[in-house]
Length: 498
Ligand SMILES: Cc1cc2nc3c(=O)[nH]c(=O)nc-3n(C[C@H](O)[C@H](O)[C@H](O)COP(=O)(O)OP(=O)(O)OC[C@H]3O[C@@H](n4cnc5c(N)ncnc54)[C@H](O)[C@@H]3O)c2cc1C
Image (cartoon, rainbow, N blue to C red; front, side, top):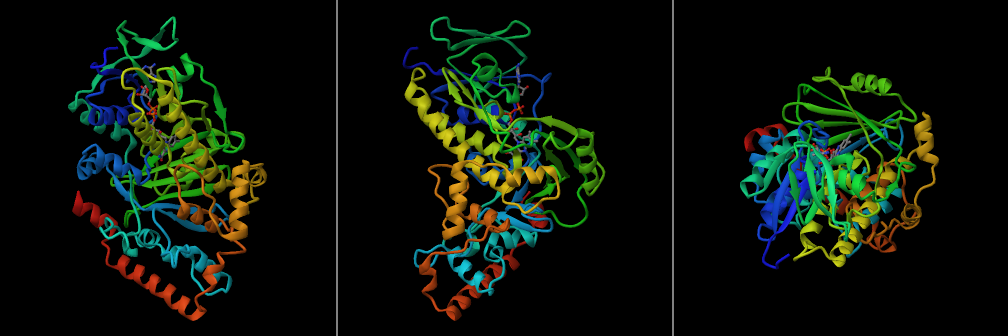
């Protein structure tokens, strides 16, 4: 290719992954990439994926998207975290917040002081020291203020939205910035005889679309990375055995709108509840080895607050990922590259992370091995860390009420997770993974929420005398309660900012 020419990027797939990629490249790399997306209405999109992580805000901001317009178009609500019910034991509940607990003192993490007083039996749950937890529980929300040192602002937020509307919203953004779109089904793939790279794809109507770089956003079909290049699949279903979901929306009940997603453990998996402005999204993620489709549907419908507004939809998946996400001139993004499972709403985050890495490693004139390796190394690290975090939710349980929970409670876990749990149990330290999502407060939330309480803590937390430590803890708690009391009701805030 001549140096001055733009790279011809062909994106196969117009789900959330395809349109996020198209919108990002058209906005952030217009001089480097000529973007052409192919999607097939006949095949459709997966159509789930309603809960997100705070990182999506950066995506929305970087692309210059108006947050209020985006939220209105997708019936979005704000999300401060996820409430987990019945995971550690039936009857348990905790919120994994998007934010920190308390405040570090003299360089020692807050949770060490909390642990010291917890063992003395003098503190309330650690969630009382999190603004995000307290606001979520009170169904209140406001955007955090600018001063990051103020504990009242020590939280982030994400969105809960209608997954079928996010792609179309991004489509208009991408097309307005020059992305081309072709409707049609890819039926054949042409490879370069020498390099093995993909040269072009052909649609059912005979249209041939050539490119320099192909982005496989074809969802679970993995048309290019799997179907054509046959990149190996790393299967993680022995650790994450859920492989099916049934999903159905229902009308919102009377009362407020929760600024959080709920995950309730069920006999053979767990059930999501995602409140949007116009309805509730529900789904049961389960392991087919332990539950039939019919029984899962019945259990979901019985647990919903209102009757389904549509016929329940059934989805199949496998936990795992492609060994390499970028092979030759094909970069797989979204479900084509892998899927863990939706327990911590990580899939759209992984799409965003891959797009960010793609832009950082974007080929100058042609694909080079260094870019590809850099991209794949980071994607590996992200997946490995997420995998361990997700397994923790299943493994850290006392539940023995069903064969599913017996299996996950007693299964062999990755060595990296065993080491992380041992470190936590003995010292109260959170293992540091090299890269990736879910920092210390997230691990603390799940460990404590699922009854893994360390025997020890940082000895420096023993320095303050008990009475002054208790006064400091009470002041933090009081400050948070006051800040939350001053926040508007979430539903009212949504109405006011729409
Ligand atoms: C049960 C479940 C719950 C989930 N919940 C969450 C969640 O809460 N949060 C989250 O972040 N993620 C969640 N996800 C994941 C999320 O849905 C996906 O990451 C996201 O929607 C991206 O999907 P995608 O674009 O990769 O695939 P898809 O939406 O499946 O899009 C694939 C695209 O490829 C096109 N295509 C396929 N084959 C061809 C062909 N031959 N020719 C032309 N076009 C083709 C299709 O038409 C479609 O446009 C969930 C997933 C599942 C299964």
